[in-house]
Image (cartoon, rainbow, N blue to C red):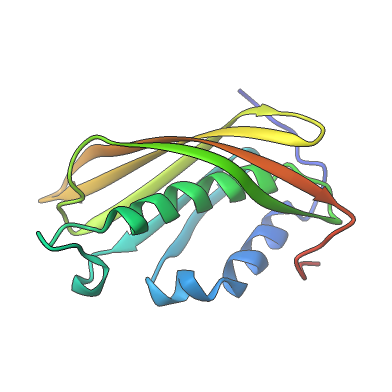
Length: 150
């Protein structure tokens, strides 16, 4: 589905917001791509981000599902709006066993107030990409409530 952003500066708005997220810096997440209604984020393997088996922790996987959706939706919102997640459901389908976590999210429905997104999280191991989680996320657009972006 093709979406039109409501702001000519959506790319800058998303990048600046991403840069303000200290948790994204902590986990070394990188904003790879942002398009109207789409976002991709990568997280390289770090043993500090793992659970007891050495796989990426479900909390990190969930965070990337949430953030990719948030920014996919945010890319379509008004210039003077901010975004919050109001609900999400995630299915962990395979262990996060690999050297790179890739989150990709697309907007399914962009409403006046609520936006619904689907996130898919992939793990890359030995050069092969495998789906490890899928999530559906509902976002709310907070109009006239910027998060500090320009």
